[in-house]
Structure formats: C-alpha cells, structure tokens
Image 1 (cartoon, rainbow, N blue to C red):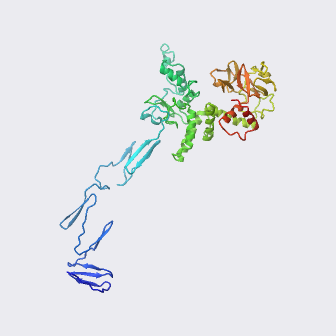
Image 2: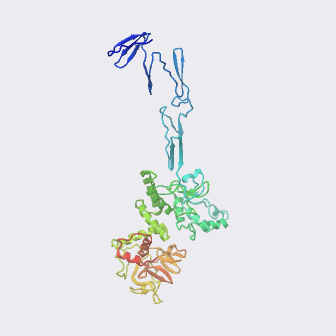
Amino acid sequence: MAINFPNTPTLNETFSGGGSTWQWDGTTWNLITSSAGQAVFKTVTGSVGSVTASTPDDTLNIIGGTGISTSVTGNNLSVSYTGGGGGSGVQQNLFESFGAGGTVATPGSPNDTFTFVAGDRISLSLDAGSNSLTITADDQSGGGGGGTPASVFGKNLNKTFNRPAGSEPKLSKDAFFGLGKFFQGQEQGTLGDRRLKAYNNPMLPSFFGALGKKMSPFNPDSKNYNPNMATQLNFLEMGTIGDETGLNLVGYDPGSGLMKYGSDSVLAGKNVMSGFGTNDYEEMLMDYITKMKINTKISDDARIAKLNKAKLELAALTGQNAADINADTITTQMKIADTNKISPTEAAGIMAAIDRDNKGDQGTSSGGGFSNVSSNAQGPGGAYNEGNYCFDPSTPIQMADGSTKEIKNIQLGDNTKGGEVTGVFQFKASDEIHDYKGVTVAGSHYVKEDGKFIMVKDSPLSVKIDKIPVVYSLDTTGRRIFINDIEFADYNGDGVAKNFLTNAGVDLTGFNTEVLRQVEHRLI
C-alpha cells in the first residue's frame, strides 16, 4: 500500500498510516511505532560499523566471527566459543610457573610476561615475526683448540696442581728405593717450572715429541718462543690478583687436554699455549686492553668494568700500578716491541728508562758515583742506567791502535776502537753481574750477538755470577765499546732506547739536544 506523506510538513510533525506512525525531523520521516504499537531499534551499532533498517520488516543477521558460532532456538539467540581464536580463553596446556636453581617464577595475571635476560657472554635475539628466540654464546674461544661444553669460557677446567704452595710432598724422594721422586705431586705456583723441566727432559723421545719441542714456547729457536713463559705460568697457577686469592686463572680442558685461561681471567677460554699467534700472557692482556678500549658493541659501563678488570690482572702480573696502565701507552709499547723484535717487558723497560733519564737530564734527581765526567754527560747523574751497563774495573778495552787498556785507567779523550772517549763513569754496582764469554759485565748491558743487540742477561752464552762492588763504563763518539772483539753498547743506553722509538715511528719533537744527538749516532 502506498503511503502519501504531506508535501510541506513542519518540524516534529507526525503522520499515521498503514498502522504505523512517522515523525518529520526536518529532513526525513522516521518510523516511531509499528502496527503492533511497540518501540524498535532503527539502527544497530557494533564495535566497528553500524547498520540502519531500510524497511519495517528488514532483517538483522548475527554472524559468528573466528572461533564464534551463533544459533537461534525459538526466541533465543545463542553465541558460543568454538576455539581457534587465541586469547585468554584458549583451552590449551600451559606451564603455570618457571623454575631455575631453586627459584620459581609464577605469573601475576593472565597476561603476565616472562622475560629472558642474557647472562655473561650470552646474547639474545627475538624474532616477533617467527615467534622465535635465539640464544647465542659470544665467541671467546680464540687460538683454536678443542673442548667440551663443560669447559666453555674457562669454567670447570681440571686443576694443574694437587698440593698447596709451600706444602711438603707426602713422600720423600728417597722413599721406596728412590721411587718417591715420581710421587712428589704438583705444587701450586710451580706450573711453569714443571713445564720447563719437562721440555728440557723429555720422557720418551719420538717424532711428535721432537716436533713439539721444536714449536715449544720454551725453545729459544722457536717462532713461538716466550722467554717469560715459565714465570707467567707460575703466576697463573697461584691464582692471585691483588687481594683476591684462589682464582681460576688456568687449567686443563677436560675435553681436549689443552691448557686454557680460567674463568676468572679476562682471557677466559683462550689457549695458553698455541702454535699460532702469541704465547705471551702479558702481550695478550695488553692486546685485550687496546681492543676493549674501542669496543662499541657493549655498553660504556660494561666496557669500563672489563677494562678495569684487565688492568688489575696485568698489574698483578707485571708489578705495575693498575691506575698507571692506559691503552695509549700500551699501543706505543707494543709498537716498539713489534718493530724491534723484543718482548713487551723489554719495551716497557726502555720507555721507563727514557722517562727516568729525562728526569735525570732535568736535574730532578741526584745520582752519584760519576768521576771524570766530560761536558757531554748531561746533569749530575741519576739517569736510569746508573750502576747498570757497566764492566769490571780490570776489563781490557780495545784501543784504536790495537792495544788494550783496563777500563779503570781510561781517560777522557782516549781513542778506543769504539770511538773517542767522552765520558768515564764509576759506580757502586746495582745490577746483577754476568760472565759473558769471559767478560764480567752487568746483565742489562747491550751486546751485539748474531747481528743484533740484546741484553747480556738474555743471551744463552751468559752466566750469572756474584756481584762486584764497583763497576766502570764509558761514553764514546762511536757509541761502541770493544772487548775481546765483542761489540758492546757504550754507557749511554738511551741512545739505544731512543733509537728504538725512532724505528717505531715515535715523534721525538721536544726532546733535549743530547737525546737528539744520541739518536743521530744510531746504535742499531
């Protein structure tokens, strides 16, 4: 039936027809009552979207979404959950709590979050797209070598000793007709001494034994030679850094049997002895410090903490003050050592010698013992080599004319094979004394051996002897002293030291005139 609404209705005007009543809102006639006379909803609105009835008998369909079903029975509409939609109502098995090391974490609400935190040397990576968590161990192995998970990062290593330092073995060496010597045990703090003894006295000579000896860090002819190996191993086995004792600094890998740095060392997990790279514990610590200084992969707090730990370890090994150790100085030290094929310890000695000698040049210290010192000698003494780099008073110095003259009788201006004498020095001996091919000389004096200069005490031809009360040395224009056709450095050792720095590319600008003069007369 057609309904004819008024053509010019007024606002809120009502019109009835066909059993229904409408009202004019200024734009549209809106249904107010149906033929039954009850009120109805014209528009239905959901969380998203809405719908308006277009006719009095229009139908609203209620459809179930994911995991939801709808049904109508009589005058009742049922909405049911069918599963598969996720959410807190999911009927699935879950862990109510997580436990570790005797501690249990229980969620505080249905939507609580369990957070994974990375421990030491562990990194976590969460991929939300694939809902996966990746746990990765940071690479700290270094130097190759085998091992088992139990020995990762130097943990759970087998001990290198079985009796405390200073303790007596349970059996005397003479027990059981001399067999007791095989049951002395391994005393803590003697690891290096034991390994050196084993190197010098191999049990069963074999091809592999010979090969191992050839590559051993105890072998002076090996490219892996480390003259400080025994001392460093003894230090590691003692396990003491500062006031901390009983630290795990070294042990044997239970899987491979290789010797590794323990978990309390910054070098944890790395091989102590390797056929590749360095076997020098000190050098490895220095390398760690220089690299950690520029590490940007960790937080500043973590980086500083690791640096401080490494400095304490290096200071304990070398006897330095941890506060005096810095990466820039180490970089220069390593450059000097590498350029001149010397150990970091020797390079450090050279740098310290230069510092002390410069203080002596400035007259800040008051050494003694100089006699007949020429004007070429700077300051009143107190230089770093006072009492070092010296000879027995009766040492025969080779002269330019082929004759010899005892060093105690040498005068300023004498012409020796090593040059004109510009300084004569007499000291109370302060250094250890050695016999080098029949020459009584201080262990720290430089001698030319196999084409290069080394300290007398580092030569296999040198034998340490008792100290003597007074020693002599010379300064010469040629920077040489010849004795029995052996070529020694003259007294002014910083001529050697400054040349090391020059070869290493260190800028000498600002050094005093005497230092520059010595560098020009290169010894090496």
